[in-house]
Amino acid sequence: MSFSFLRWSRFLYLSLSALSNGAVAQTSTLNFANTTALGYDPVHLMCARWEHQSVLKGDTLYIDGGLETTYDGDERWTDEFFLSLNYYLLGIDMSTTWNWEENLTTTIHNKSASSPRPPTTLRGHLFQGLSSDPRIYLYGGADFADNDTAHAYASPNAGALWSWNASDPGSDWQRLDVGDASPWQPARGAHAEAPGLGLAFYLNGEAGRVASIDVWGNLSTQVAHLEGMVVLDTANATGRTAWNVSTAGMTGGQPRAGAGMVYVPELGEKGALVLVGGIARAPLVTDDPASGELINLNAVQIWDLASWLNDTSGAGTWYAQTATGDVPALRTDFCVVAGAASDESSYNIYLYGGRNPKSGIIYDDVYALSLPSFTWIKLFTGQSPRWGHTCHLVPNSTQLLTLGGALDLNRSTCDWEYAGVAVLDSWTMTWNSVYDDYARPYKVTQGIAEVIGGGDEGGATSTAPPAGFETQAIESLFARGATTTPAASGGGGGGGTNTGAIVGGVVGGVAGLALVLGLLFLLLRHRRKRKSRGPTVELETQEAQRYEAEGTVLERKPEGPKHVDSELPGDTPAQEMDGEDQFERIVELGAGAGHERFELPGSGVEGKEGEAWEQKREQQDKEAGGDGERGDV
Image (cartoon, rainbow, N blue to C red; front, top):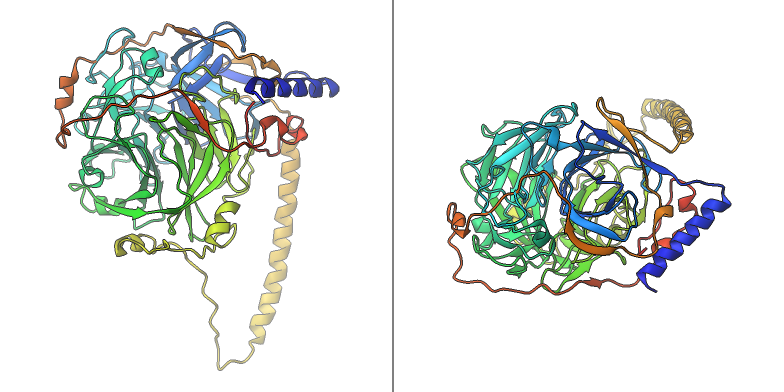
């Protein structure tokens, strides 16, 4: 069954359902913040967006930059679309329940109104900072000053950390020079954050020759890998804003790009970074992005944060542990998030999607790396592969949000998740279009518990790798976890029954039960009131203007758009690279003696056939709730 037929079938089904219920097309509310737009609507006219950066800060999910294909004209599903950049900072309201098919609210912040003006980048990262800090931070990423010629990475944006006060949408962005830590502007590095400490991490990555947006979109950019890990201290707790920590001992002189990294706060004294995947090769050697060695995902690297905080002049301590189980295929450009069981008996790192830059295979699957057993577990396989996306696990929730991503290698396919966001229930591994601000707290995924033992709240019985930890030091990192409640010890003389304790326990139990019933009544009444509200939600800012953008499945055109190899004009000045000699400025390790070039063939899709999206339960499009497996549309 073809992609077009599936999408057309769903179009007919939804149209008939809407007519039979007397329904009309729902709309999504867009708010343009600031004053100046750059000539196109990055949300309503979006065909696909990938290689952006995003962060969840408070009640807002921010999306910045990235490559974007946009439709030509005022409506979706026209015959042509263009490759350009997302010049805006987008904000999705997370303070209330929404359905991306009906009532998703997006605020569009125009960064070009700021002085100084931040760059429009891709493959960098946004960091949230401390919860008490109103700012978000932008670091790294490739940018463009000119669409005609190549430029070395000595750009005005290199060595800069940008910040923006999210509590004051009309405020300007601020630029802080961190060139002493790294004069580069790295892109496609592995990133993680310890928000409770105000520390952010950007490991390795690449810098390259960017001739044009189109060249980048065709994956033909010449890049060089970079050594080191930039540590950003947004809380000023270490005495410096930025550090460059050597990674030579961990990489063996082969820094990586396109890898995934998460921060697990429960490990060790100050938490630890866990690194997986990516592609590695000698530093400062300019070559095709597919050149290098793909890292097997059974090779897990762990960085003990306390080992570096105790001596910031050093590189800290990296540990290596081999993982077993259903190890994912070699890949880059996936996303990873982490969740911990309530009893800390397991820490589960979820990996979604990605691509193999050598074979051209793109993946639609979800795996979990469960610690401390270091076991890979396959949780989901679908029919909608993507790469270059981002994802976030909502705090104290099972909801895993995925943002954007490219569905092929030649940017010719529009994202059927036309709002650029999807919701995965990490407990049941079911996809849907609804985000619920009252969702249940995080629970161990059912498929994980079946392998490591225990249940929703923890109680894992597999608490070590099958062959044991490779070092005692790795095992000691998990000493803080797996806490259990000790049995109550007897008191008083001998082993006699304590009548007073029994009476007190009964009275206390009755009082506690009454309190729980009262709270349950209030919660149910509150949820009834919340569900009685209308579906359209608006996020107003002081300088925002309302903009209505039609955004429902009823607009879908059964025929895919034709790709036109054109670029939208933008007012972002281009940057040029002035030659490979720039790569000699900073060399942590000598370049390798040579390198091998690899060709990136056409796209492919790997994964077993699953249920199509239109075969989800019929009530999903009538109500803002429900689950369903993800498939092609």
